[in-house]
Image 1 (tube, rainbow, N blue to C red):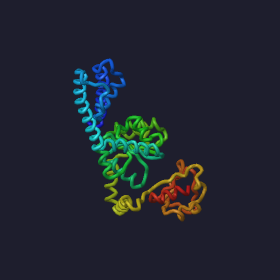
Image 2 (image 1 turned 135 degrees about the vertical axis):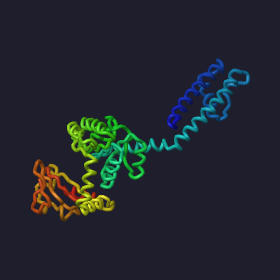
Image 3 (image 1 turned 180 degrees about the vertical axis):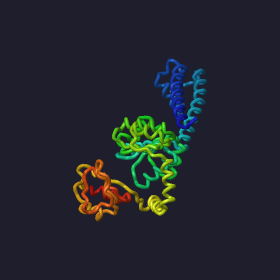
Length: 336
């Protein structure tokens, strides 16, 4: 029996024993015993404080026999309750409950965060990337063992539950989140959760893992913005390592450098942004930040402006693509 269940059993047992004591003393005490007298005798018996009896029991054999039996039962109940509470605290369940409430409050404060569904090797890679780039995120995983394995390396916010359930996704803040990354064991699971997430938040970005290439089209149809095939990515990586090893080594070094955390990042130029209408030179991006502007993705079907010059104009709806650290990315966002 779990320690939490033992607590519930102890509470029920105590309530039953207490009511039995009140009823017993009332029945065996005689007509001179009021309800308050019976409650008083029950309390001092259970508490073992040794106060005097309300009425003399020396001449009342039934009441004395009941008192003896009741004392023994009360001691057993108290012993069980004490051991249950001790086990509850020692086994850490009280700490877990308090920690869970604190974590739920932290999750409730998140806005524009990411939700990772799954705890497999692919999800671990996603979690490492989000952690190193200082992004806010929540992990949903039903397996306690997988959550414990993640917690060894990363102090994550998590929900232990089924990501296919609406309430679990809402608890993770899907209606406030910026994106969901699906790395569940099967394509069917990823497909179903994609449908669920899209129904809960029509505007959220969904990136799903697709093991079977045939499933990619279905995932796109039901709402996934992008589907990633681990097999294709692995094959491309192997080919790149053979054909352009210096480039791959450079990217690996960049990704694994925990001090700088350099990444290729993007910043959207939203409506009303201070950058909109300015040239690259006038924006201060190259003089006031430590980021390297690689390209500008023009809004709509405008394509890419690679290595833009200082006279290139930044427009609303563009996406600025940088090589930047998390800190320099905040500097860019400060300009916009």
